[in-house]
Image (cartoon, helix red, strand yellow):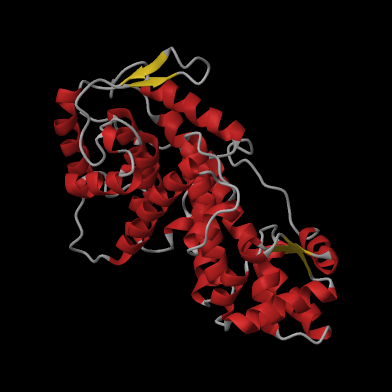
Length: 379
């Protein structure tokens, strides 16, 4: 028996309706395939990867994750964090690819174990890609010596995961995808079928459920970035403990978990919408200002990441703008000389940040943004 999907109340249905309205607007905007869409998708994916790994104690900057995604070495992350990020990136890339795997796609234990090996294959001593063979405990965030949750005995793991796989394929198919993804997350993290990496796998499974919906790239629906912020991480652990209880007990009320996740999805939808609006405005303004300064519009591919606070690398700008190496170098030198960018570091470690000419554009665009709202506090 798994933890059961709860009945939704009027507030839940209202929040779901608001999320769907934001998703419809995003789908409409993305259907036009704006030139900055690739940069936005990469940035959202990097934020999800950074957020999910931060929850597990592997803190990395979004810049470093974007660098790894582009085949570059990170500037700040240590070796231990780097291999964790690379594992999660592999799993996320596969999850994104599964969005168009066709109607014949089926969940199975091999898929779950394969994703787990992508995440944890560098820890061969932790049985990556194989069910655990012993007990496992989730420790309290307040005291690592205190078990906050005791997972089912290892002998029950194969049957419970088989039940979850059956549910993923055929269960609750009529409920909204946000609820279904959240219940997949809850059940997998409470079964805790692996020796390590269960939290990241559960969040990955939630994203996979979204990718199979195929209505929007999954990085626009993942709540991992939001969960990775300190206060939200504590809230995440608290609601898991509240709903999961001290041990496996699927008779517990799962509604608080669904309400927490729907609130997170609503906030993340606001974030995705805001970034989309922000980049649309910024692309136009930066293009106009750069053109007035005698620059080609292609340089906006370098100015846009600097606008939102990321470090710009020559190789990434070269890829985004589909330029030669020499052209990218010339453009970046010119942008530094004119005051659009500032250079940091030397040779291969050189990066570029926003210069004084970007500051006014940042100020003008940001003044048009409204504050975020909590959907349940407005109820």
